[in-house]
Length: 329
Image 1: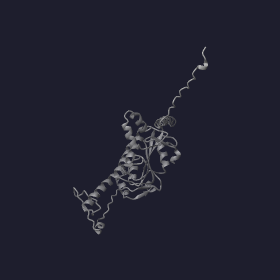
Image 2: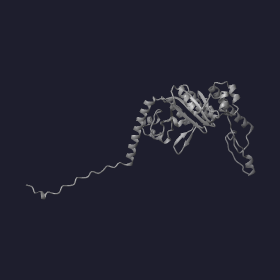
Image 3: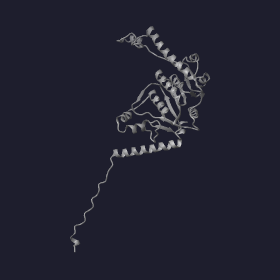
Image 4: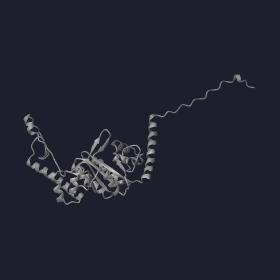
């Protein structure tokens, strides 16, 4: 028999070390869950909504080709607008497009680029231009690319024309004894310099430049509004019209709010009732570079960001975001 009193005491069971997740691991898990939930929401929304929506593209402030938001790392300007219009054209869920304009105008080339893009888009989908407080000069230029233009009665629009301003401080410099020195390669390289008066030949050159851009403006308005060039030229003396005056002159089609423009776009796009609205957020430059550098995951990741129909529960860059109808009225 064995003496139990001489047995060694039982050894304590070794404790297993507890696994601790790092902060990076937790972040990755959260991102995976959010993306998975977003994809499920996408499928559910498309199944419920049938993919029927109206794209809303907003153009506000000074019209220029490009700009950069250093805080968000995103580019804006008409380059961003053109990108949104491209996405709306490629997005099969978008049945019509509303371009909201609240701008005093801007650069001719930037306005022309959006005008021509709307004309091309209008061959595939209905495009409605809706005017806010002001849609003048370059903003009106853009609106003429739409199939229909809607303005409020008090909207300030028109201002069809081109302006080029200079200032001359030569008398002020003479008063204080300042003599600027300019070294140039040709007689017109410093044309428009504020340090000397404009010569008659230089003024003639600038007038020719302005008149050429003006004729392009008038021709595109005439084409967009289906009006004789002679009639547009009579209206294109630079003056501003109210929305009501513009309708009487044939410069806009209807009077109404942005909501009315959305309803019209939905009807022309074959959507019954109040439509879902879709907007496209800009993709930050840093994210584009990251996606471009991540070759192994580029096809999946770039499709998630860039695909026009992508909809996520979070406002991730590049995702098409549905707006609740009540937020847009």
